[in-house]
Length: 490
Image 1 (cartoon, one colour):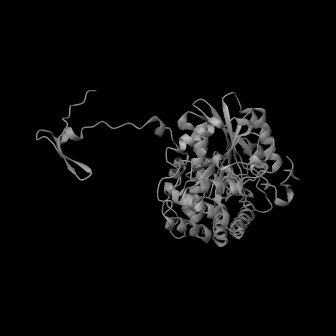
Image 2: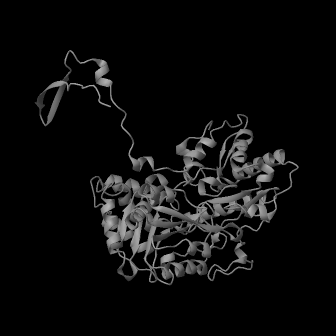
Image 3: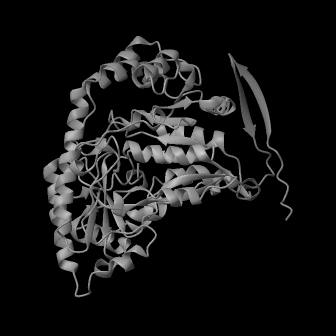
């Protein structure tokens, strides 16, 4: 529809030193209606298609908590918010030194300064998976590293395999580009190990990569060596690149061992995405990296593509880059040991408390910062009803599993002081006792009909003394409101 013509306002200009100053002077006959009579500017298709499923979850949790009880926010994936896990003094000093030096006040290379990339090499390059500084691209957090990898390997119409339950950012990064995210199942009855047959069944001629998250968010699963090798065999058979999301890396406990997938055989091309957010407890510093393991010389163009993509932001924060060498070299093992101890103690509290509650089915983790708990919907209703009730009656916030493509589950964080975690478990137990009705618990067959389903027995992840983490074998057979910034499932 034609719009009424709006006459461009007249103006005069003058020069003041290095500036050109324009003085707008509307014509006398231009009405206010004509000046503001604009059509709304439509959002781009790319922005419109950029959707994080957590938004819907935020809306569902926007219910008032019980004002008589203090808030316990077990849904927050930010380890800095509980007060139990401050960053190491070495890390803080490294950043202060970088600021004081004034060496990092200006722009640097878009891939990151050499000394920072070399520090990544020194810490993570191994005989089984060697790489050089030229194979490292620094990013604005591991999430940005994942973005670089996804955008560089796939075109519209291609597909990438992602885990379910899994980190929702994977689909958020794929869909605006017309890249299909295909979810392979994690078997929650087997400690959230990959359903290998299902994974392989999803592969076709348009599959470009498999994202492997180990240790896992939200499951806390740590894949044993043998299991990772089975995944690599699938990738090798189909000539697929692995995108390894290893942001939780060595954050394992209770006997579990983290093994970087790039170190194992069969050797396939691997793009490792990592950073300092979780293990060093500084997620707000936004520094991550991509490591390109270019087996068979097939990732040369992809690496150049990621370098080009990195130029969009001209590299991550230069100050944190300047601090990175000291962070990686000087943080003592005792710091990481303390973090693991806190996570292990909290995991034991939650698992041992909630496994005794009828209709709840926790899966014991061995890594990352989270635990998943299955809900018997015949007893408590669906997960939204359950988590809303916890907020309204007990002021306990948990993150519904649908945020991770896992309906009838919820996720809790394990980063609080142990006494707070214990209080949260007491409240959850009280809530369940108040709402336990006469309906029978669901049969296992009913439960397994769901896409990602809880188990009736408290099998969870096999106990640490039941798994050989080298071979992968097991003794088992097969405040008053929630703001969107405070619920991001990182």
